[in-house]
Length: 299
Length: 299
Image (cartoon, rainbow over all chains, first blue to last red):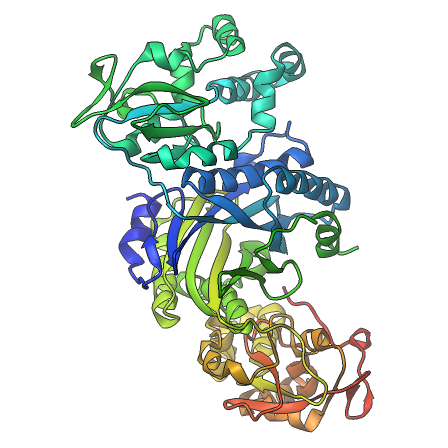
């Protein structure tokens, strides 16, 4: 049993504010006529923080990871809290970290309102974000809806491929594929998409790769030709150099923070990759099974 | 410069929802006519979790630490999120942890609505609590207000004294001083006090010891005779056995989760220890200086 299943089976207490508990990108509470979105995301040095991230990048990234979940629920982030575990009082690191966090605070128009600081053996970041919306969006779609994906996919996969396999040549590759490493170093939550949210029937962000996230939408047809349109030129070049399949790369690239959106309308700044159907999961008409090897876990 | 000061100097962005940012037990946001309290509290194995705590105790405790901050601001906790860093998938630990958390959820009538789980080298707990109130209470008092403290003080100090100095005799002492160790193992946030909050002019919880927390109230007279009334019989016995000064113990016992309350009214279930004055800090008429040695940090 997964940890989340243990939690769901043991934690049953509800109150009248809860619209949705443990089950989506974030929890949803209703207070009067406002919906509050609550999300949290933790990063630890040993598991989540590639050493090529500068302190500023780490600060920006923890905000992005949390704010992305709020955005994926159709909400505006209105407050952020950050708890830090630090192994030494490295004030230079702390200052640069907060500078990155401040940049994110300005970029996303989301104030940092509090946090906690503790002594720990290695770096720990725990963010919490509060969002506000008049209409929460869930990980679901209606039969007949088109499925859209924002931005591009694959760069994070490629950068981690180098990071884990060719650490000694990292500098060279960072020079030859700058945009690939930029997306690892500074991913952006798609806060620009909130203004279209009234068109969304469903939404989630891509943390664990398109393939895995699509399963939240239960029944769908997707098309490789359409997915490949999300793969930018540098990723295609990279795939050729390293003999990787660009479709696999696009399906398995995690921490992209792009959005999967379902809608019956055309969605600006997003590309259609398929549709929600009655029953079954198909890629190019063939059964699409997560156990078929589409999901890697990088972190 | 303390980390919190670095954060305050660098993180300046505000929006119209923020009533109070980084500066109190929690942040305060106003949405329509409701005030939301946002608090977060992190605990890591190496710094915060004495090995005598059972997994159930740890689960209850992380909820208590967060909910106590919400209560100290005069709010009812309405949702809790918990992020976990685990060094191995020890499902027995996880189940028992969630059982303790569930007990807290029922005890405080506060639902657990989400969280995150990551792989880490040692146990990390990061809690976040959302509270709701029509009147937030801050760490302040009005001149002439009496200062009250709930419950009792000193037991946590004594239990940690044994834990750090006589680990080999821990079992014996746990038998001779059961209530002392019970308060370390299962402290309770004073949610029972919220019903009196309309009488409060100020409030904060005792995380770092009475002496340190009192400094948030700036100017005060306190009296040792009155403070000693907060010290239970077993702590007095313990102090005699170990030649400790019970006043020092009461002033420096942290993680008690009792409340310091200021009010011009009598407060039920709390004992008066002094009053807010115009200028200065005095214990029994003598200057009371935090640098005089009253603050120890146990964690």
